[in-house]
Image (cartoon, rainbow, N blue to C red; front, side, top):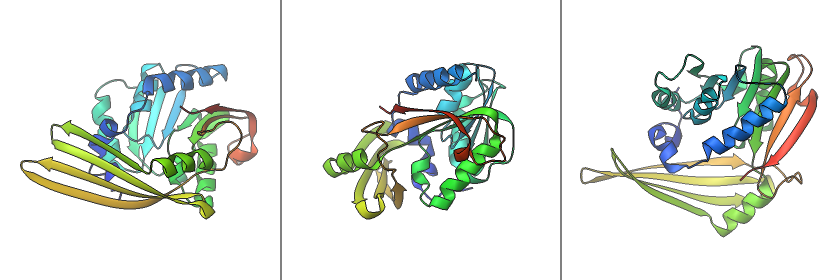
Length: 249
């Protein structure tokens, strides 16, 4: 399916160029959390909202069997291009993380996704989907950004701008964020501008993101690790045996 946000469609190919992440370092932490809870290399993982697949690819390199799912066909195409013929332990598919079918996987990773899920009913659907996917005793690793630190940072630096030279031309990305404190939402305006062959074209998009309240674990946000010890028919948030929250960098 075609995602309306240019970052996830027309410019899926440029996402990793514009948004840097320490993927190897973060996946080392994810793998350590999994191993601590008995989900060792060789186990099956679902990367829910996998984007360009960089986390799925790295976790596959570390020995996990990973299935990446994203609603954007363009991001999935980019993920498959990046993966190449890397491994039969790695696959990608287009799908909606709110309606994942029942399976029996050892772990679910949901990295950098839930802030885009605005409505509470949709968030509940996401957690219900994670419960359907996980086996009893499986592990859910997710992250969220909390409101207070995000508001402080965006109030100070509302503009993000980055320019990269690519084989398709010079690409400039600009994002401007406005705060809506009563709803703890961010109003975001993005512009991609591509200069090539003496021409300049721009794509604009506006959307809303939601941040969570401070939980005391971090000034920036946190990653939560949840072990589920009841059958998947029960809601994930009601079946927590072990929860760990770790500050995000």
